[in-house]
Length: 352
Image (cartoon, rainbow, N blue to C red; front, side, top):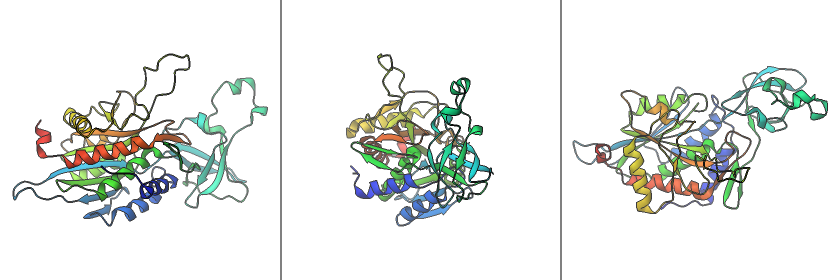
């Protein structure tokens, strides 16, 4: 079994603190290239900006090649794009990816590649009308305030200024979705098994339409694929004191194996294989309850003549907000479930 130590925590902190809003993933890409190059047999950056890594396996025989397995994790995060200079340090912005405007007013942000500090501002409560207080403030009524000396350009990305923290059994940070998946893929590359050809896609632009993963799947032409992501937990208490029966995942119950979501019906052979692996290795896991949301598996399965896919995610609370919360145990169990599954994969898996 693989363990999480200071090296793994330092890497995840570095990944989470980086700014890589969809379409401008350069900060995370540089970290991935630095970490992956010493272990990769092949590494390239494709036309969209995804990092594609190949680790060759041992050929089983002269006529039989090892199973080609693609694992994907997306490098991008939700955030903002500067769309207009409103003068005197105020900037209009648009959201990039799914962000609830209720999270935004008063939040600290960083802007551009120099991480210029700013704040999202709007009219204070003292100056609002009763009717205005009943409605969510639209982003059109907000500005990013960089102060009179703060400078940004139209097209610059911005994101929340939240810093990574480890708090007891939890980690708290922006962009856990999906930097935790990126960290898992890097660790799996460092411990790649020889029985398969391991293909890794550190993809771009997942948050705006699963774009990078589709291109990566065309490049690798895998036999099967696993999307490694972070999924929303809906495990908060029912505010009326009733049992919560509408959860999709829960913190502390291990990796979430998908059955179906808005973009994919996961391959039953892969679902059962992961379940059997978890039970055999005594790794805690859960099934993600079917519902909204999707992963890059939805794009990968439609590439070329089709690819069998399954998604495995680390649960977290407060998705696409200034700070999310995950359990360290779920991170570790997800890493080990995937590690053991890769070690035990054979071509017979797809003949079940």
